[in-house]
Amino acid sequence: MISSSKLKSVDFYRKIPRDLTEASLSGAGLSIIAAFSMIFLFGMELNDYLTVSTSTSVVIDNSSDGEFLRIDFNISFPALSCEFASVDVSDVLGTNRLNITKTIRKYSIDSNLKPTGSEFQSGPISNVIKHDEEVDEEHGEGSVSLYGHNFDRIAHQHPILVVNFFAPWCYWSNRLKPSWEKTAKIIRERYDPEMDGRILLGMVDCTEEVDLCRRHHIQGYPSIRIFRKGSDVRDEHGHHDHESYYGDRDTDSLVETMENLVASVSLESQRLALEDKSNKTKDAKRPAPLAGGCRVEGFVRVKKVPGNLVISARSASHSFDASQMNMSHVISHFSFGKKITPREISDVKRQLPYLFGSYDKLSGLSYISNPSDSDANVTIEHYLQVVKTEVMTRSYKIVEEYEYTAHSSLSHSLNIPVAKFHFELSPMQVLITENSKSFSHFVTNVCAIIGGVFTVAGILDAVLHNTMSLMKKVELGKNF
Picture 1 (cartoon, rainbow, N blue to C red):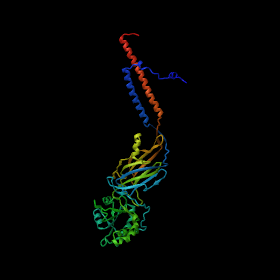
Picture 2: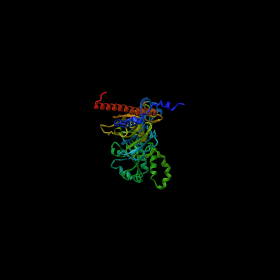
Picture 3: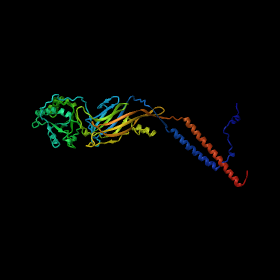
Picture 4: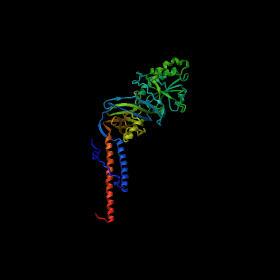
């Protein structure tokens, strides 16, 4: 067996008897300074160990979401009616999707951008509106011309007033006019305004009665509105709520629609018998927008190639006066990729505060144009360059987001003004990865701090002690 005396011989930390040591005020001061230095440096090392450090690199985009990208948006148009608001998508590969409705919601809004009711229902889309094939030049004047000074009076005189808001220059208005007048003449003969008075057909020339058409939010021509007297009167304004007619425009279809409308105000005993008949044209009539503005929100999926998201007035059977179209809008939200909740954003920003600065760059911005003689046909374009950013920890992906830069401009257009968002995605992506820190490295640094401070303090103490001893010898006059 190895004796204890032999084991003591390998002791690296041999002790000096306490009687042989001497305490000093300078040593005590250095010891206190050394202790505080150790605590301070240990705190800094611990903070560095706990702080997330990242490295940034640029790599080829290898997205997990495939070749499609989601675009979420919420945009308010104070002067674009939901009746004609259309969301279209196109790209350089030839994709051209018009009037997307499945993932889009529209709400009528007033001039203060506040909703005036529930979601606007666009209803089924009819690609072809039927008109009379043979035009009868001797159709006569069967409808009543309405003006701003007599519109309300006549509307209150008849339970049902059906009005054709038209423009003389409009191709579709001219296609409708013969069948409209013929229908009006037939209805007048069947339901004489003086003897019966349940229904009346009228016409309004929107090139002359601009204010009247604006009051009823007419933006496309021709627009057929159905005004009902009684329960549809707005108590706060005294104006009639009304429906829009989107059905066929041939004489037979119009006459059938008018007959069904008359049936709705017949005697109570006749209503049940005529209920099935009145449902035939239910899809052709829908509530007209209560205000002239529209909030368009929802999302679309696009290919990851340069393309356009366009919001405009569109109809296959209406005409628009480009000089009166106003595409001013306020953007509440516009982002690319998976929608990220505010909580997720705040969690990531606590670690990486520089992220999400351009995630929703257009949010809260307004783009306003005022159509006039010198500022008409204005298209508002936004050019967006999109870059994907991924944040990776050692074990999993924290977030995947798309940031973009935006440059906007107002330009005059020869066609119908639109709001266009031109997007272009970068083929590269920014990859932010968390740098792992070894616990053993942390322990090594702590030991280095303790040992280093202790050693430096010992050296300083020795230098200070020897200096003071030398000064005392000089004062006593001893030479050595």
